[in-house]
Image (tube, rainbow, N blue to C red; front, side):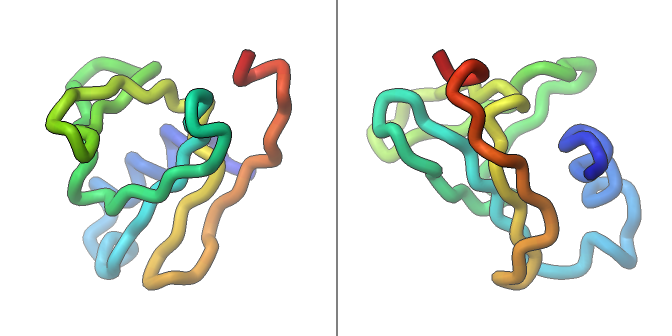
Length: 90
């Protein structure tokens, strides 16, 4: 399995691979479930290799650590998956 940062870089820089609809699923510790967010709604801060940002339904900006990403879909097909490990999310 390739690191999530490497996959996201490929999506951003490989025009042929990037054609499609991408969805990121991350583990939310409060909700205790995987939340899916369209990639187009995610903000990547240049140079930050640890977090990305989303705006939640209440309009608040949330920073999500890359290690909480559990799945990536392209055109509704699972292309990347990380197993859930409790120690990561404590």
